[in-house]
Length: 343
Length: 276
Ligand SMILES: Nc1ncnc2c1ncn2[C@@H]1O[C@H](COP(=O)(O)OP(=O)(O)OP(=O)(O)O)[C@@H](O)[C@H]1O
Ligand SMILES: [Mg+2]
Image (cartoon, rainbow over all chains, first blue to last red):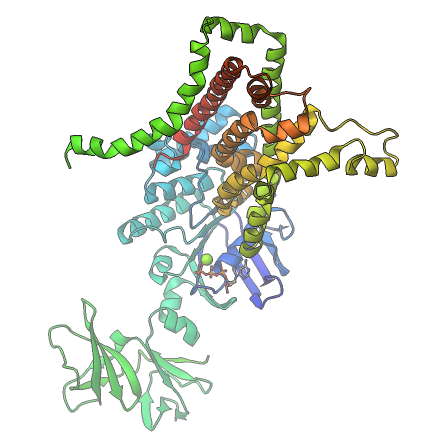
């Protein structure tokens, strides 16, 4: 239950290239913030620096107003759930969960009471005497979570805690995590590379690209208004039309075509972007025309790869009226859905 | 496949075990029964002789001390090796095996040269003025322990490195985040996970040190007999095969008791860790 402030964190492993550059982030008390980014973007590195398992090259970490940048890991009073869960294999579920309390030198009665309560909350009561090897992946995940939460940490750090679970369990567990986090009001950093997962449970999302935060905003804001091409690509925009100028204040020039947009044009715009399902199919001889080169069945729609005067586009169309490969496809770009990006 | 057939297939292996393992064992026991003397009397006589009890006690002590020292030296070494880069780790694993790869006689003569009255060690200590007269190191129990530790440490280290390599570093980090300092992590997280391997190593070293012959023979001399050298003396020097057999049987039984205890304890730990 605390605020977290990262200020200008930088990290370089050994003599290699810098992994984090000037990373700053403010997390409000009781919020769940996700670090979203592709593999190798520095999510784990950031989390390990916050935990104190790695020493940053420069920059500061504050919890509330306390600077913990140089505090050793065992004194930071945080909790972390690892991707491998990292349960103690030689201890029972009960002893695993009790470990942090034991280190805090709580009395035996207090430990028993707290552990019993959290096992209840996480639905592990019946498994208390089992060893980690005797649990399913989902159960191990719960134990890791219970072990992290029982110490009432100032900050809960989760490193892709759901990536070892099957799709169904993943959805159930992420809701469980969110429920516990809200109930206990624990400030939480959640690392993931799954955008759906992080949109579902986060108060705010920080999109990480090569050790830099590209955008930090609420999930809805990121979904509808990505600020950079990288963020847009990461969350499902597939079409990027290079802009080479504006036409008055209502349209952009793309190749030799003119594309109208709603609202005033931005002189600095570099690309126009739109999701495949936002492009509208139109009746023959209306709108633009292109030729289908690839058709992919997505279940709810067909996705067409279309050669058009605007370049190659990804367009979704209804499953009731499939368009054959090689056939022409007519479409329009809704002016109010096109998003100009400056970077 | 039919049950009877399966038993038929087991016969060659069973014969092998009987011929190569049980038969020599029976051979050892036979002289103690066929010598004409009452076999029980032979054993009680042996176990009542002060001299023989001393040998038994020395054997057990040397094996125990050797085992404890190899654990104490082997653990930090193994943990250190397992935390090196992969290529460096492989190099070290080979280097470690060196003592086992040298010939037993050559290896022990090296120790004679080092530990002798005018040996390397005494000369060095005297040159440094740490001692005024040479120490008696050779032909002592200490010399046997030193030689045995040197011989068996590689086995202990190899066993422990295997186990230490399998430790998940995130488990130690999880403990650190929950407030455990490095020494606490060693005691509460690393050692318990390595306990089965420590016991396996102890079983290997203890049984090796109990039965080793060359090392106590060359480094212990005639006044520090252990059971294996006593057997040799009885059989080859005194020609008393009955007594040699009695000592051999006692050695086997003692080893089995200690190993049985260690195995039993390992089993309890294994139950804890590998249910899966
Ligand atoms: N111990 C290390 N030594 C050197 N480089 C490292 C080390 N650990 C990570 N890196 C590098 O740092 C970069 C970021 O790694 P990090 O583990 O933080 O990525 P991540 O965002 O968590 O990726 P993933 O989604 O795959 O877990 C990568 O390029 C990686 O190769
Ligand atoms: Mg990672």
